[in-house]
Amino acid sequence: MQYGYFDNEKREYVIDNVALPCSWTNYLGVEDMAAVINHTAGGYLFYKTPEYHRIIRFRGNAVPMDRPGFYVYIRDNEKKDYHSISWQPVAKDLSKAKYRCRHGLPYTVYESEYDGLASSQTMVIPRGENVLL
Image (tube, rainbow, N blue to C red):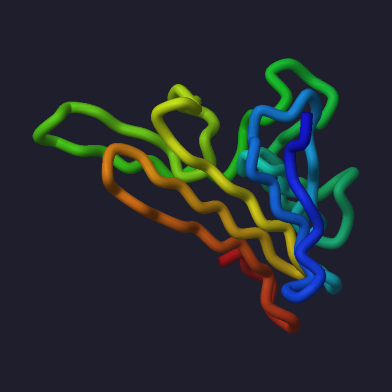
């Protein structure tokens, strides 16, 4: 089963099937602030050293594998329904929704289409800044 592919033109790894058997991570940041983030927005953020200065706790080999993380929820008040842009942690039925993750250097983009609504979330740590946007 194919989960994704390399986009040579954009220099990204594109994950079209987010139901991977294991976490696919990207490393953001090259200076003091850094993040390790996976294909469903699970991960952690740290300052200078991941051993002592983690801002968000995460264990990549733990169950569930992608909690906690950097999740954005979208809610439709009229329909009383909600989803997350990165599929997790809500995990809507993949036959009724589309999710995509694009890991690039030095960013990750999450894209979703659910119930007629398209949304995206970009995660990046700008050079020279100690902030995750």
